[in-house]
Amino acid sequence: MRLLLVEDDLGIQEMVREGLSEDGITVEVCSTSEQTMQRTIKPDGDFDFFLLDIMLPGLSGVDLCHWLRFQGHKQPIMLLTAKDSTEDKIRGLDAGADDYLTKPFQMVELRARIRALLRMVNGYPRENLAVEDLVLDPNTGRICRGLVELSLSRKETALLEYFMRNHGRILTRTMIADSVWGAETSQFTNVIDVFINHLRNALQQPGRPDLLHNVRGKGFRLCALNEQEKG
Image (cartoon, rainbow, N blue to C red; front, side):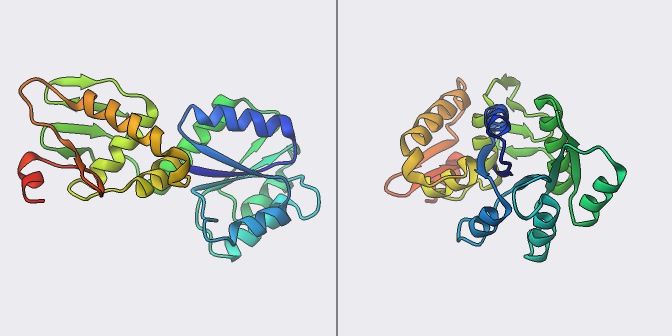
C-alpha cells in the first residue's frame, strides 16, 4: 500500500515512515500542498491513502484536502492537526477528510485509525480467500494449508493475498512490485524473488501439490496442479 504524507516536520516524517513500515505501508513525503499537487498529477500519482498536516507553509492542509476531492481522489484522507477546536475539525471534515488526529499522537493510534479507514473502504468483514486447501482470512491474516496454520510476515501475507485474489493469472514482477511494494520493479526485483521463494517454501506441505509456480519468461502464478498443466 502506498501512502502520501504531507508534513513539513522532519521528525514526524521519519516517525511516520518508520512506524508504518511495520504494516508494509510505503510512505512517500511531500512538505507543502503545492508540492503535493505537482506530485499527484503525475502518471504514478495515485496513492491508497493521504495523511495531511493542516498547518502547512502556503496552502493549508484543509484546502489541499478540498483540492484532492475536487480532482476526483476518492481514497481515505486523514488530517493531522495541532489544534483541538471543534471548528477546525468540522472545517476539515466538510472539506472531504474522513478522519483527523490531534498532535502529538502515538503511532499505535495512527496505525489503528488507518486500519479502520481501510476496512471501511475495502468492506469489512471480507470473505475468506481459498485456493485448493489454502485458506487466508484477510480480516485477521490467519493462513492455513489444510489443517496446518502457516506463520508469515506482514509482507508475505500481503504478497499471498495478492496472488490469491489473482489465482490462475500470471503476475509479472512489475505487477507485483506496483501492487505489493508500491514501487517500480527495478528497485525490488531481487527482493521480490526472495519473498516469493520464502512464500513458496512456506506453502509446501508434505503430500500436497505445489501451488506457487514460475512461468518461464513471464512471471509467477498461484494455481492448482491441473490449472498449471493447462498453461
